[in-house]
Amino acid sequence: MVGLAIFLLAISSTTINAAEDVCPPATASGPCKLSSTSCRPEITVENSTHLLVNWDKVFEGCKEEHVRAVKMFLTTVGKNKIELPSDTVDFNTKRVSIPGTPCLKHIISVKLLFQGSYLANYSVSSLGSSETNYNDKDKDKNYPFSGLLEEELAPKICMKDNGNVVVPASQTLKNCRLTVGEVEKTSQTGNKVTLDIAFNNPMADQSSVPVDVPNIKSCPKVTTQAPTQTPCPTCPSCPHETSTSCPPSANTESNSSGLWIGLGFIFGFLLGLLACWLRLFSKFRNNKNAKVTIFNFTITSCEKDHVERQGMVDR
Image (tube, rainbow, N blue to C red; front, side, top):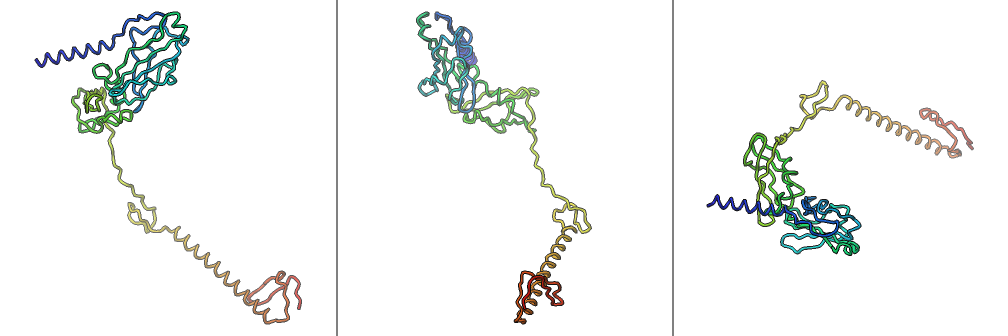
């Protein structure tokens, strides 16, 4: 009985998916028709907040001169149906980015509104596509996430030496509570590994699907490099070559000695100059009759205590 129930469930699911792929016959008059093979817009994931709607193959024989506006409708599970603004959909673009999280279930359709001349000639005012059920387990053949697990995530999965696999984080599906990190594989045949990836199911708390990784690669080994020590330069008093605290080099000591000698020379020169000026000041102070024009004289020898006048001196 259990086997029969599983068999009937499989037939039911196949029938639903097959019905989803069937397009209604093109009965509308006029050159613009609904495609008999691709009557539903194709939905793919753009990023964590937007979906891409491609309706390039939905309509046949339609020209821009026939159409006055393109309408797009979006229904998110548990919410009301909304009509996207007309200025976001262009007839010639055939590919539109719409707001919608990839984690939830959406129903999307496109409708063409014809010009008045088309209505007058063919008695048709509009033509709508069939609905696409994104992320619907029973109706979406690319469930879940339009096949994003196999296309984007699977090539990045790797295997560790212990046999476990590592699932990287996905920025696109970051809000879907996706399994990430190290997990156990369910089976392995050669380089092909199968594992279960859990995620946030639009209709339940949590669900999982098997994901195949055809040619799984080994995870890169993470090595921790020990801090390196800079050896001392070659010198007679240098300690062990692996030590990082080296004594001051000969050049450093020589530079320091030269600096102090230079400072001492400058200080001594300034002291001598000060003493010289003090002697001169004392001499001219004692000579009360001397009138010196200080701008034009030169000191030739402080030791002899002689001042040579080069300018005008009045006595």
